[in-house]
Image (cartoon, rainbow, N blue to C red; front, side, top):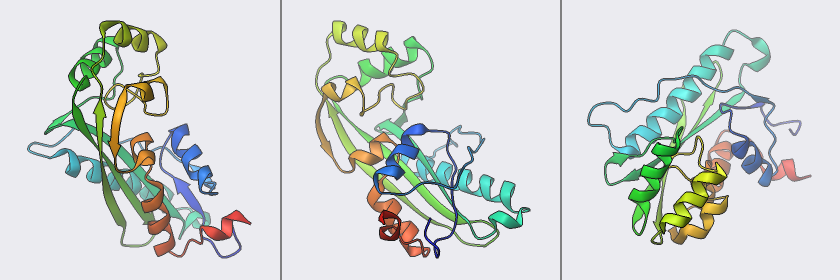
Length: 206
């Protein structure tokens, strides 16, 4: 953190998001996972879901830190990734059956990844958010490829039952949009939102 930069809190337990921030030279001063209900609302689109969850994560952490003077004015950054086929939201796979069903659905077709992003200052009104849409196309997957990927366990806890930064990268024939957003944090938009709140990204590089 530079002398002028506000403190930064990452509202996520994801090590991938910590690594992505490090890629642009940013280290959060605190990692504070948000515990919220991620159940989609009735008639909520995947895009709306991603944006709402990111905002609610940021708000939850802001509330938790609001009574601590040390963190007043700190910037809370939160994100949520939703994988969807049409309006159907795919789960964050916790079982092999869930992951297998996701891979079978994604095989040989395109889908969309919506990554909601929100930056909210602790103890202050107002937040800034974005939803980044990325189109991803899978090649046709053989039964052997699906079985091998399931055995790797790389799918566990991943939206849509896969991680683009792992072996599943071999399944992707085309991606249009933000690669980092599919991993979990759109870096261009993250830098823009932080800069808009007075956080000097380039200052962190020195």
